[in-house]
Amino acid sequence: MTSVPSRIFAQRLKQERESAGLSQAEFAELVSERLSSKIDPSAITRIEGLARTVKLDEAVAMADVLKLPLGALLVEGDADAHLSQQIQHYRREQSSLQAVFDKSGIDLHRVNSALAVLTEDQNKLREHQRRRDRKATERSDRDSTA
View 1: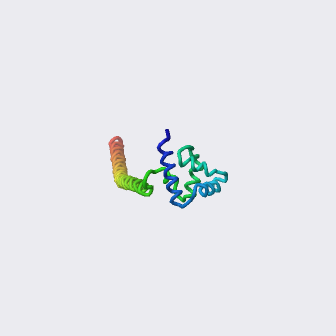
View 2 (view 1 turned 90 degrees about the horizontal axis):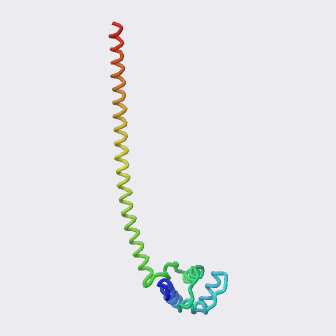
């Protein structure tokens, strides 16, 4: 039983190779140049016919020969539409995350401002308490000397 990705790859490879106007022999020669090792035209026939699995290096070289991203050979139907859907999905996610980030920035500013005000208030209160304690000590000293 052939896996779905293998089936899709084989179909898309044949479709794109034919669309580029390349015979299996011409395509095999160009792929061989990219790989720096020989791939026989019969290997292309067997890959397209699902009689042979494609190696990762071969798949990358094949996509490169066809001037396509490798992912375009793994998507049924219109690869551009598929990529457009993915781009839209990630743009929505980006927008959502940007809103969270912006809100976080606003919240951070609010918290920083509150901390600054509270710290200043605490410092004033401590200074007030020190003055009050000094005055109480001075009064106590005067009362004990009198």
